Image 1 (tube, one colour):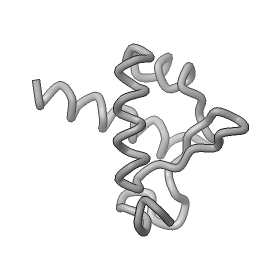
Image 2 (cartoon, one colour; image 1 turned 90 degrees about the horizontal axis):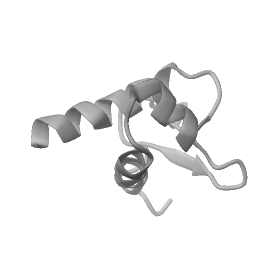
Image 3 (cartoon, one colour; image 1 turned 60 degrees about the vertical axis):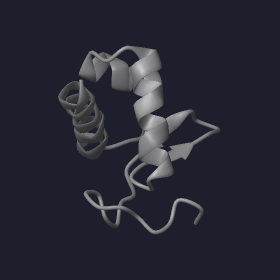
Length: 77
């Protein structure tokens, strides 16, 4: 189970890091094959950890540009 969660998390992170523009949940799901509920939960964890930023007005997610493979500051920043 943990391995599957990690695979899905890395698939989302890889899709985001390879994207030129922010991706919507629908786009992330289409690219990774992950269901919307699972992708939403995993994205929430990535956002909370500071690895992913959301753009609420555009409902899209991005990886912080200055450090695409590491945590970016504190989640509350």
